[in-house]
Image (cartoon, rainbow, N blue to C red; front, top):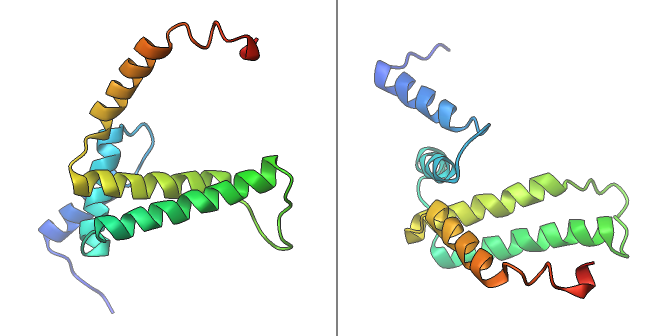
Length: 131
């Protein structure tokens, strides 16, 4: 079966495809790409509470991989760890939460850098535990 798409549909697919290319993507562009993806494929965002539960679940999956890779636990037979995939899953849900709560993560990350730089400017350099 051959489907014909009108120019608007093709343009929307092209724009979404461009947004799904993440190489050199800024945080703001990542937020926009996730938003477009959710609207195109996910219909709508899950509730904030559901996404918070999803974030907790994804952080737990990341913790499991880290614990089994760097800690005392071993992987189960047949288990294939993917640290990067788990980190990306955490980031995805965090971007969803930021979008649906109106948080600009670029601005907030800059504020966090400023706060930490002011607060910890010499703290870590002067910490004998880190020498």
